[in-house]
Amino acid sequence: MEKESYITIPHQITDKSFQIIQEEIEKIDPDYRFENPLQEAVIKRAIHTTADFDYLRNLKFTHNVLEKIKGVLMNRGVIYTDTTMALSGINKRRLDKLGVSYHCLIRDPRVIEMAKEKGITRSMAAVEVAANDSRQKIFIIGNAPTALCKIIEMVNENQLETAAVIGVPVGFVEAAESKQALYESNIPAIAALGRKGGSNLAAALINAVMYNMDIEKLGDEYGRHTKQ
Image (cartoon, rainbow, N blue to C red; front, side, top):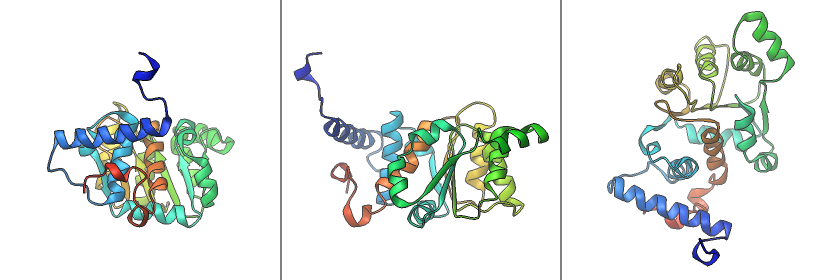
């Protein structure tokens, strides 16, 4: 392609992408309606990250989860991810500005030792270690169904308190089942039902909430592409 024939300015590329996303949504389902502007921003960010319009249908939001996530972000809570990949994709400059802590414990010596002693995955052990943190917590799970199952188990047994869970592990073994269980639980959650998901999606979802926390007041950064 000749340079003059394609867009080279980053924000114009992003703007064009979100415009195309809205146009495609209108083709797929002209009657589709988002529940609120923040949910719209999050779903569109998921589609932007994955180029997968299935997230219009399989990305579920339970128990006022977006407000719960906003509460943690605005009150100096803490984020725990199941993978370093998920953590690397989160906008940490924004988190630092908000005073929000963030951790992936998968390489923590306490986690490694616990996993060996109990014969469980490190992702499960990381949840147990994180449970000792008394701060408001968000768990972001993009790869490990066992971590998601452990969260649900510990919450049900009153061994863990979490404000919200982003549960989007990808895969074929227990991924769909763990997300269905999260969706059906009493935990405020964003869950990607089915096999699809991943660490990149997990990071994109929390970023989308951060970028659009004031959407009702200020308008989405891509709001000009939002169908009214």
